[in-house]
Length: 461
Image 1: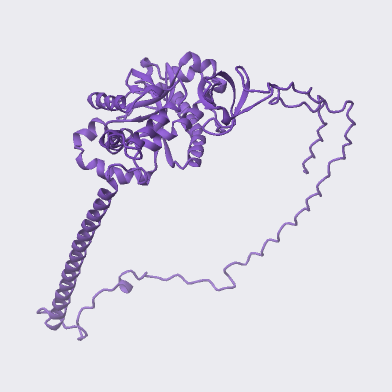
Image 2: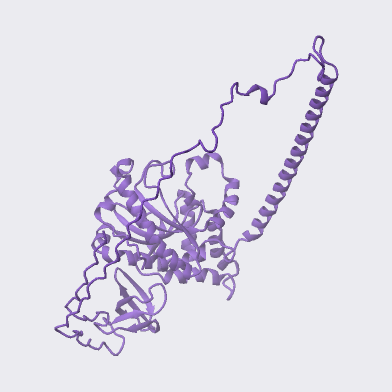
């Protein structure tokens, strides 16, 4: 779990009420929520890096701006591809984007698939979302879904691409849903055909395809003590979905890599042409400057050779002397400088003797009193059940919920168990679980007596 908790309260959620959305008076409490959310997200970034996913963290504006259409009814924290990858794709995405589209929606968050945390007055949610404007990621997802029908479901062909996505959706906890807008279904029941239909509805309404977990306000406030850890685990559970859908050079199903290389070559050629034109302009400018200086020198020499009538030539007797900087600004009377002996006859002031600082006083030794009682050990924990059964406490060994302790809700008879992990419940293989005896997590109390504290040494005056 991250070291910076969210600690969401009713006051935090109320700052995003509809009647406060357009007011700057609530920017301060919204800014506090944003800062805590960004600090919390850094723990998620570290866990995603362990899975080979590099992301940057950004937060939406907490005050009304053009990017949020002068309305702050929620707080977003985005985890998306790093700056170098975004810049590479933005050159391709901006090619067909008009100025009016950029003015209508100046926010850059709709053009890239992302993992996110969203907080509003009524709920807290974590999700993976991809907007229709994220054309590269949408095309990559469509290619993955269409590959299963193109090869007729041949083993090892495109069907494996769609099977990877549906398997990742089925591995999500039961509380996770998928859909567009308010029309959502359980994520485990999604099929490639259903996802394709959701993409069509998303394009028609210009709203994102959403996969995630939404926690109502009452539940979030009641379980605020464990909510931070649960939200972090939920985002890590969505990481495989992000890795399969978001485009990358390792996850390229639309041959975009070759298009980007062509764009880079065209960009390099244009840059070379601009540099050649710039060098030509510099050469022409330098030539014009040399020509102007040569003409000025010729005019100067011509003026010296033929002086004007009534004026004596240079160096001739009676010719007026041209003023120079030395004669123009020469002072009338130069003050006499004092001799070295008269500059300062004041005796040098002897430095004041320093009073040596008193040596530091060592603190008096403190004899620790012997403890009246020996260490108090916790009673032996009762042994847990010898076999896996309903109600047994278990620890997850690997996956997004590794090291988490839960309770077995039921066994499906196929080698899997439904495990309750706080607010989440998910199916985990029995081989990935370990029985935990009751009371093992309780620490032993060493003693109820405190060791006396030595007094602090006095500062020397």
